[in-house]
Image 1: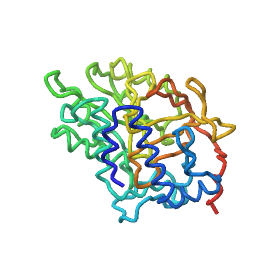
Image 2: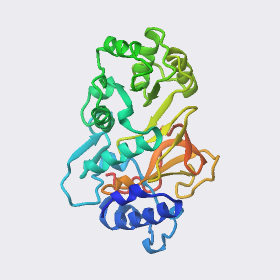
Image 3: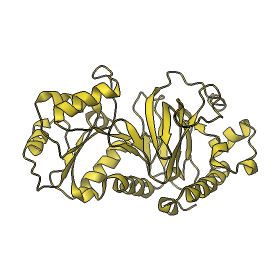
Image 4: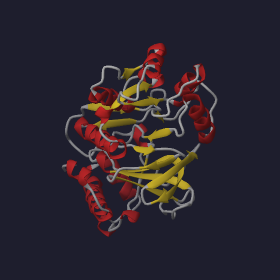
Amino acid sequence: MKLHQNFNISTRSDFETKALEVFRFQSENCIVYRDFLKFLKVDISSILKIKDIPFLPIQFFKSHKIISTSDSIQQVFLSSGTTGEQSRHFVSDTSIYEESYLKGFAHFYGNIEDYIVLALLPSYLERDGSSLIYMADDLIKKSKNNKSGFFLKNTSKLIEIIQNHSKKDKKILLLGVSYALLDLAESQKFDLKDAFIMETGGMKGRRKEMIREELHDVLTKGFGVTKIHSEYGMTELLSQAYSKGNGVFEYPPWMDVLIRDTEDPLSLLPNGRTGGVNIIDLANINSCSFIATQDLGKKISTTQFEILGRFDNTDIRGCNLLIQ
């Protein structure tokens, strides 16, 4: 099944049609998802609306090979964590991932060539298989700017680039893990009112956890900006959502977010109610596009949502079906 047509979605009707096509394809071709649906006694022919599609618990990516194709695997993305606790996303066509993040970035921020991309992602660079590093590396290359790059230890060079930046130059995009951005913001005073500071979340055990409001307050003051941007992605997805401030995320036309009832995982909640975050990512055509995450959140509007926390121990119906 060809995916690239799914990036051309322009209406809600288009999305629903494509999502149902992908559901029918994966219900036949993704063995783990097919068995999960059988366990739930789902009649595939009765699924006529998105709200009726069952979502695969994200834990299966830790225990099983989630694929919907017989094509050879080009890349395996790994989550952080010890061996045996890592999620594994087997990607048979990395060009789909590349098209997804490039079009997703362009959808919210414009042409990547308009930016100097500065990546401060030490905890990700220090391990193998990070999908975030794969994306950041390509964005750096696509920016076609010799100032763009990764900064693991040489933060002095990063500070030099920031301090010498002129409004005549391209826009600065500083993409960083939370604790590294905090360390940089506290190292000295910056005045970056024209820059985009984007956090990817995560203290990675390096600093105490902070609520979003506290984190963003420190970062806005430290970098001299009015808003902190955020990127929402994960190993199990091939698409990202972005927040341009206040923790409100938006996603591209080939994604959708639904909120499930924490007491009844097969039931969905209306906008404004807090529950488990279900994600449809049509870029996951060769794995599974319908994922029940361990994040807690709420839907604000048709294309906007908030992340409010995580489940400590998620007990999703059917999750133990294949985990043995």
